[in-house]
Length: 258
Image (cartoon, rainbow, N blue to C red):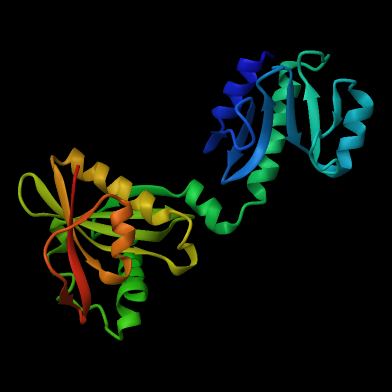
């Protein structure tokens, strides 16, 4: 395989990221922020890969083109010179796949969820809606010593319900309510406590904004709790108007043009 073929194969792995943390000639391929391959863009003939520690010595003994990981942990990494190897393309791909799988398996549950979570819309008839109601209670109501009531969900059959779903569970959720032909409101944004802090909320908002655009919206408004106002600002929402109280806590009205 050529350098370009190997680099392209690495980049096509699900959720792979091409980075250059060391210098402009060292391509580091990551998943979930962790490296699974390192390619030398200068010589264009070597790749560092993670491998099973108990199999590394056998690989090195059987292939002159494989050596202990250069500048890496010799226990966990190998360096393959793919320009001077008797290995087939299938064998090289197998080594890349194994490195990718080993690194992905070492990721935390939170990070795996962020990578593998799917986002979709659903109706109030869906079993996901009941899960979403419980998530809203746990994240948005219980901390305020409040209980989600039938009045709170009245008319939600007309809204667009969006869930971040992982292992068939709704772990992130929001609603899009139509205001007019060009503006909508995103509300009830919540992420499971166990999944906060890894970017799932940002992914949820990105998906919600795509859905809004597909429904003809050119701007979105929301009522942001004061405690998360700066987070919405990082997503390019702007404050409009003064602070106000809602469900007993300070809020700000915010807007974003799509």
